[in-house]
Image 1 (cartoon, rainbow, N blue to C red):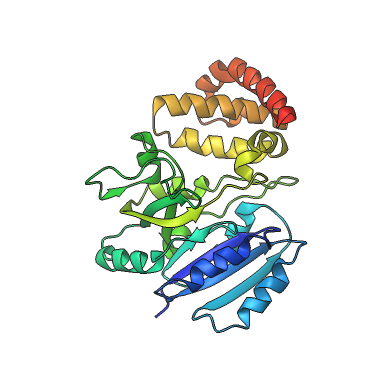
Image 2: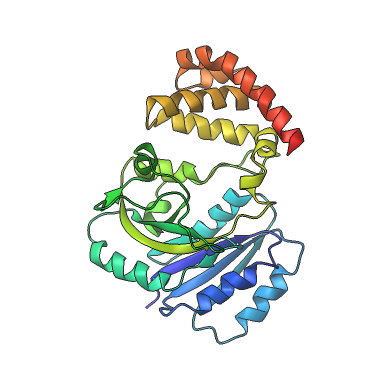
Length: 295
């Protein structure tokens, strides 16, 4: 019985998507659907997926094409079209780790009645096999995503969410002329009501592309200031530490200044702190502009 949707947002990744596909074919447990959300690709992504759909894969492949709008809008479309109990995002340049689907099923069957939002697992570098950041502390059974990082956790983690939970919070907002809102927005809202069950196993093998968002962040700050300001406001509303609150406020000031929003102090959930952080926000803005040119 299908219990999981593996969804893959894709934008001009015809060169790497086959390895994602092969990693799914190699799964021992095939009780999942693979959903590809094509975010306006202009390469051979569509034809590549159609060829795979014709094969006997052992799992259903669904394909949705949409106008290019950025990763967060692809996630919105995915969540609108997922009907399985659980879902997990495997990016178009990553591989699902060996045996990951079976590990997810086994873990979930043990805790599905305990009101968790889902599972949190590990990412590993596909070239070296090393865990991205830190693994989970010995004995850690449950955590929120924000709580994990606040307690010293590091590195990207693989999140497996209940579909009803991920859809219980608002969609990612879309700002005209921009194509980025951090995915952590939804996760932060979920953190306020639910915890994640810790699965100390590698679920995804990753490779960061040089043209991926993680390598163009300074330019992203300039291109998508409203999206970043929005995300910082959410983080300031639900701070995980004083240090993080101040950092997010400085970034909020910077993004608001880049966006030309003169009402950013009035709109801030931390007005006094925003006034105090504005000079540092101005300095950060200058740094971002210089870094964006050099990168």
